[in-house]
Image (cartoon, rainbow, N blue to C red):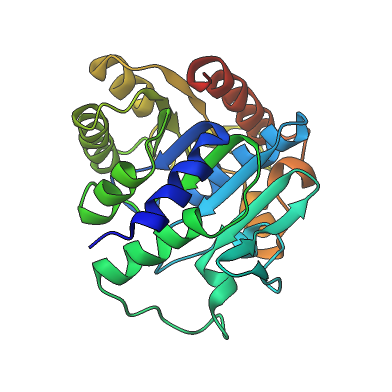
Length: 268
């Protein structure tokens, strides 16, 4: 049974957040978390107050990608917790901050996971936010459904790769969002071609253009394509957001342009 006091605290938290963006995908392995992290950093660079909520309970990777894996959330008092400050105006909450070791597996069933996510909203002192970006678990099953219902998003972004098996799932993700009356801000095509560092030619490892075709077929905006860059992997592993460590790269410029389109199409 839901806690009435907790429900009120969740409602009070959501009332102080202007825009809530759900970043999800039809399948795993498409770079959804990398996109969410860099999108949050770009928006924070614009001077907005940004919250980043990692609700992938079993694979919470945002803390490592943002160089905050050794940080911990702090208690303010009864039922109040301070999120981790990545910089002055970017706050992060993740299950990884509650684990005593990064090697620990979270072996929880659905109800316990949802209880933790509810606490991330009811007990965390997010303050006034321009955007809360939610890094959702992949797929269209029970967890994404419960999260979408718990956190009424003002918009949803779907991340895909150009290959057909990913595009099939991205179209399902659009249908999922529509059934929940979520405003689909658009589709992002990640891992969209590799520019060879030796010859300069483009190599379409996972094909190219499929995300745009899927967006057109489903009648939703196409937000842009992010090319493969080996430095994205290195940046994520070292905890340095790619858009900050390689601002002049084609991939960083693509991420920045996508953030602009999200602002145009997803803000209230």
